[in-house]
Amino acid sequence: MKDKSSRPALADTNANIGAYDKILLGFPIWWYTAPTIINTFLESYDFSGKKIILFATSGGSGIGGCVDALKDSVLQSAEIKAGRMLNGRLLSDELKKWVETL
Ligand SMILES: Cc1cc2nc3c(=O)[nH]c(=O)nc-3n(C[C@H](O)[C@H](O)[C@H](O)COP(=O)(O)O)c2cc1C
Image 1 (cartoon, rainbow, N blue to C red):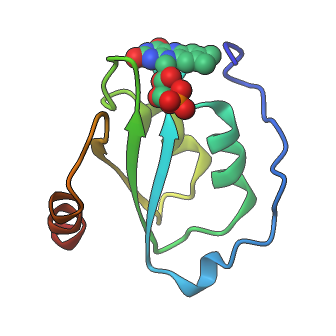
Image 2: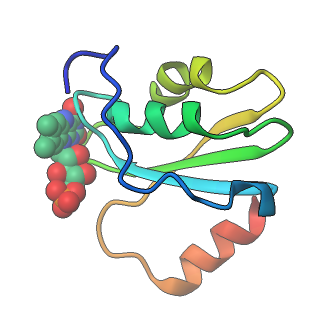
């Protein structure tokens, strides 16, 4: 969606967010940023005190601008940061090592 103010509806609104402190949130890059359903997701739950780490796939664009596009969708007490792109083939060991650093 090019309309950054659009908020497509979630199919599932019962995610048990309260059970997690750290959340890895992934999406394909659309129009250089996260699809706006990711804003819907962040606005639909209470992420206060939680750490949200972003990962993404794309045709070449990076993850750099995604935090800016998403940070207003969470309370200030939530930490949201860019993780990494996961394009291409990735060995499970490499993925595991990365996740352990978070
Ligand atoms: C509507 C739309 C917009 C996209 N915009 C971008 C973009 O700005 N930059 C980019 O590198 N890739 C863009 N892509 C490519 C997707 O990021 C890529 O297809 C996706 O990450 C790979 O997932 P898939 O294999 O499920 O398609 C776009 C794809 C779609 C459908």
